[in-house]
Length: 500
Image 1 (cartoon, rainbow, N blue to C red):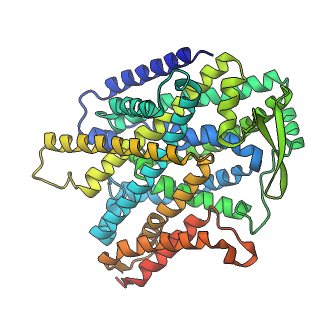
Image 2 (tube, helix red, strand yellow; image 1 turned 180 degrees about the vertical axis):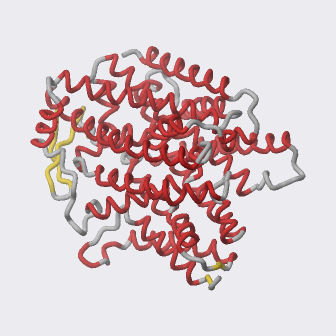
């Protein structure tokens, strides 16, 4: 497939997004940007959140995990499902009761300014790292398969992509994001379904026959029963639940869309609908990963056997290069599957790219303006001055995103989903500890010590993870790092607290 043709589809897709943004951002204000005037449709929010949660990491990395870990990622997905119920029935009622614009205002009302600023800064750190990592992954794939062939350097590609995102988020904010994320989720899921359907048809397999084939290749194991292993099923399920509570329920980007819905009941319906669809979609991504391997085997591709977690694993090899992991889906879609699948893959890929960045930049702008700069509290600022401040912050975060993408390019790591979960463990742990302490206790905090305790917990967790060899039974700390971090933060806060 000609890179020029593929690039033309990318350009047409962006023009569509720009048209939607222009339409939805008419007569927008700061309230429109921050919370969509609290008039978002819950069904649109639920559907659009799928694209935001999946992003390019799920689209590319999850199919690639099948070769090394089978369907074990589904353990985490089951945990996600549990976590969404906690968000719907514990956190959302709290946010609606307090009528919050930024969810970190809860920490201000509960513990005061130090806790409030600390929570907001940890969100800003975590979302900046996570969103730029997702953004880098998708830009890198587009670069390798399209723009390198056109002679466009990676740095130029990154600048153009960020400018595109800026153009359609600069004015409308959340109101625009709700609609563009809905559109992008549709195209991402369309790409997933078409790819699965085509491979099943090409291999002349029904769903049950495909599952039997995958089982024969040892691609379908879900539950890991080794207690000391990072992928032990209880670790993965419980860890997945706490990841959802932290990365959705305590994340301004995700909650910003939920609290833009008119009523609590509609917001809860959004969350439960979204959680059910997420389980199905993640299963389809794992199924796609297995089918990609079966397709390559059927077409006579070269394979090699390697050892991973004590098992023989089959990995796809092209020209001596290992194509397991993040390389699997793009390599097959762009080089081995028919041209129309390449087009659909690219559309799905850019549909995964934009939701992972546009909502993040919007949420980070909102959090920094409201939580750190306090522009809504400052009565000396009029509406035009607030708008100018917001636009300046928005542009600044776009530049930060660009620099972080360059940084991740220099690292050139092939397992993005592993890095993403590690980042979540370190940066969302203090948020988990802060909110849990506020909800589960009635104690008061000594404000000036809150930042110290919230910083100390991740540092101790990092030391533990780097010295797991000293733990009994060769125990490996994995996804439960988030819980350990949260518990340490909770304990530290208890130590500096007093009775109400």
